[in-house]
Image (tube, rainbow, N blue to C red; front, top):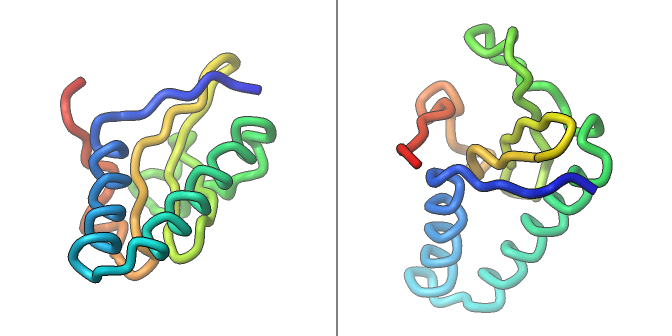
Length: 106
């Protein structure tokens, strides 16, 4: 199993999902369920990192970004021989072209 690393923006995405569902929508169980689905999806690709789909954006086609579904969210990640790095977690309705893989400094 690969080590797991989170880019700062991915941590913020995950936290924002929990806050939105748990506090703003007053649905704490939905927030817990979403976190579980996200965590389960990440654990699957830590074991089988090639199983995620390749990102299909023209601007990113030459990169090694991959996706795994944690419905209704998509986790964007990359990996090497030791580490799987989570870059973004976006709702499927969010346009990846708009949000791209904008990152925050470490």
